Length: 203
Image (cartoon, rainbow, N blue to C red; front, side, top):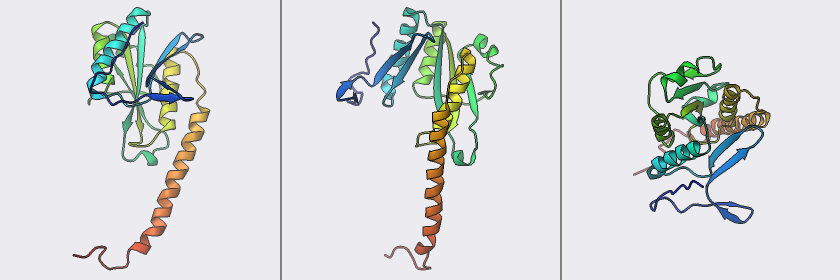
């Protein structure tokens, strides 16, 4: 069984599920879809990124995984003004890139950089000749974005050849958008009460 070590300098965090402490890094296997999902309940520390990339690559080789799909967000300041976030793809080889041109609702990420654990995963899998597709979707900066998740899952399903039900995510996205707009309207209403024409602070 492959093991993943976060290193001694990692934050001391465990995921608690129904009173039981478990590793924050979990693997789920979908037998019907022949799919393995790697999910972390906490942000991966920077000093653990290369260990994680090696763990995932070694695991893929051991169990005959041919393609790895990474999903991440691209925070943008005007996310609230966009009806549907744009999606981009990044491949770890020219051969894989040439096969991705048919993915609708996703554009090639032409120029820029990718950071975090996804960068070493792309690099490590390229060295070991494993296809790695990274799906990058525009998202909010510091709050959950279920709609971005739904877009990414739709692209992944289309690439793998099956349909995923994202209705629950889209419903949650509408609720979050409504709450944000409500807070903005409330802030606008309250602002005049603070503008008395006098300085807000005195020295």
